[in-house]
Image (tube, rainbow, N blue to C red; front, side, top):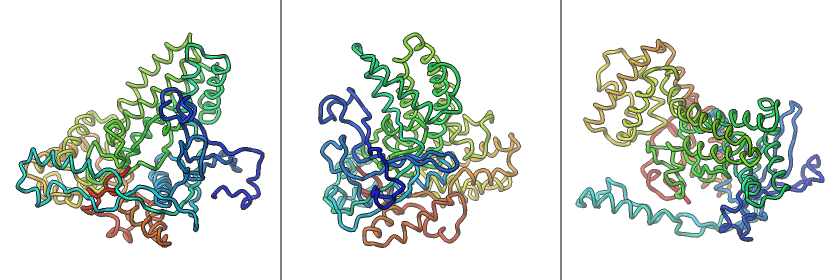
Length: 505
């Protein structure tokens, strides 16, 4: 659906399509009006809602439909490349079992084009094994690589691309940033009664739209506190789920955090190849949105959400603060263990789990294996006899190695494997551990080099790979032997360093 209402008579309505302001005074410099009311959806427009026979409500939102009041001088368009990434990634996340917005359709124009900055491929930076750097001292080599990598992170050419529109759907697109906007207005020293009423209405709307069953009793304070509890559980589970499947959202701030606890905004995302706790595809992610920091980013958004409720309850803000403190410890702090426990076939009650996960992170950081392949192959170790040799254990995981591990790497890896297997045995969960692990560790994820093949061919009118990746993503935990040679493999070397593949802006 492209927004052409004449093509769908049932969609005709008195309603006006709308884009929403997200941030307020905090971002006045980004606002063309310098009032804080001009920062919002630059190319996303909600065009209607549908209630199914089952009673499910879907809000329909076009991404790339044109200019909005908040486009800040841009054209409001999306291109085929980014639209294919959004469409495939949101559907892949759904089938991975991660709460997400869905992609209803993707429409590409046969006429409209725009120019976008992108990478020519001519500025690929050398890696640490480049022969040209062999004579450079290690310390200087690291500094040189960092400098060259930084220089190559900005696009170096303008590319003309076809315009496209993705129609994404969700029960609502209400974000933490929306509550934040109204809260800062209502919480100001000279706030009007109208501004306070508007905050109350949007909080009530959030409860009615996203939490009608769990927050239905009590006054507004009690219902808001109930919403806090449920939202915290959803948000912690969401960010832990991202880590479980190797997904990095890349820009998880308040305006990309849905109050319903779903993944949205598939622009800066990426699935991890070789393990790096600081991994992110978007050059602007920084450490705060990096792969292993996503639960903390979720907590920061939740803190903004909780703070946004306080202007409504001057007499009850201590209860909000107390609940926030409790949730920080009881929900977000253990979330990382919740991400890794199913990947390792362990329960959250396993006493050895914290030590096993902590030592695993150290091993992964040193070894830098392929994240997806490592955990998928790890399941095969469960059935090996207790006295299996070091060589056999390492050989089973070798398909995930981007480099030959050193002796110390092998020693640490094998030591960890044996501790993990003991923990499995102590829990009495060895028998079906491999099957459980395969249900938690996908075999296939949408790596950037796969997506690049899809959108390059699509630009030439060939959508074969787009459809193939869609089929692949619908069963990410299945073996799918017909796709194994093509897609269950290490990332090509250029995918780890080439602009547009290893990173993007």
